[in-house]
Amino acid sequence: MRIRFKAWARPELEASEFYRDEPEKLKDKWINEFRNKENPIHLELGCGKGQFISQLAVQNPNINYIAIDLVDAMLGLAKRNIEQKYFEENKKIDNILLTRFDIERINLILGEKDKIKRIYINFCNPWPKGKHRKKRLTHTRQLEKYKEFLSESGEIYFKTDDDDLFRSSIEYFEESNFEILNKTYDLHAEPIWKNNIETEHEKMFSEQGIKIKALIARRK
Image 1 (cartoon, rainbow, N blue to C red):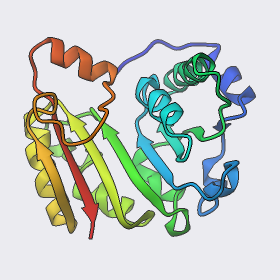
Image 2 (tube, rainbow, N blue to C red; image 1 turned 180 degrees about the horizontal axis):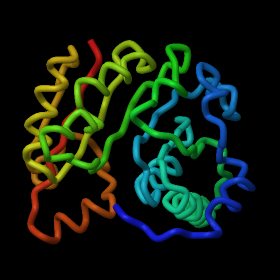
Image 3 (tube, rainbow, N blue to C red; image 1 turned 90 degrees about the horizontal axis):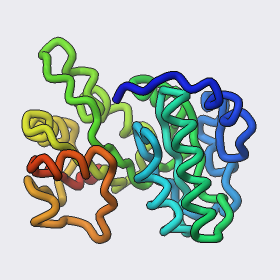
């Protein structure tokens, strides 16, 4: 998703208590950044404006969340959406962290000791051209990187509107020795998890009559 530059985003992020500006320094030590160090860590790759992660985190105070994006403007909007959601629920923001990083190099900021229990990938770029497919967040190349910090039996929750990306992703997961626990070609008609939180893209695609594909994969 393209978004206009927002001059306020970088200063607001740098002043935020739940933004981390140098994530490379936190590799294998992310749990120390959270108040409750006994909680498992879940990760969203490409959090966009934060509508999904803000709702998920406020509903699950017993889980710590890291949300990553590459664009300051997106992260700035995510920060504001998180603040608004926690304000509405009259809760303190203590179980979520935002950071800016290139997901293709994710293993530079997360390691085996971080023991990520779950990864969320929602409506990532489908990169339809053959020469660009290795950029897909579900490509085998990326999945092998995730395995470096995904805990034993850790899971990946994946949603997309793109038929080709979904079919290819099933193959990618199998190639990388993930077990597909459940999948659907119409998430809204055949829910495979409880309390589905609609993203901005999901609502838009659904209104256009496009079925939402989804799966849950587990590391063997």
